[in-house]
View 1 (cartoon, rainbow, N blue to C red):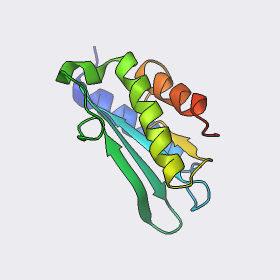
View 2: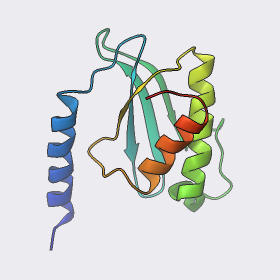
View 3: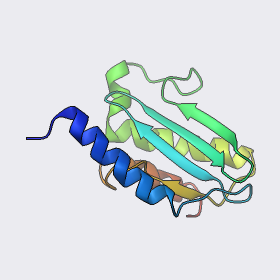
Length: 123
């Protein structure tokens, strides 16, 4: 049985392997995600310029969910993906590189990525 610390260590190893190849540019920023038990966090990062172009989470007042527990499920993540896609389009970003943060591509991560694609972002 894996402890929480061991699971986190393995996730960080997977993330470091992915980060060797995934690089964000000003034209095509890296969209990195972090998920917690109840919330979802997103950043669009330009690795060449070493700056964050956009940052958002389910905790922000602009994306408000009625109850806290509703932000930690797939339906809320799909809505959040549509919201993030609209915000990125406002910043004139249409092409991105998706960084799943070492998490498996299923569940909330997959729902978020599909919502970004459905709302016009290319990756």
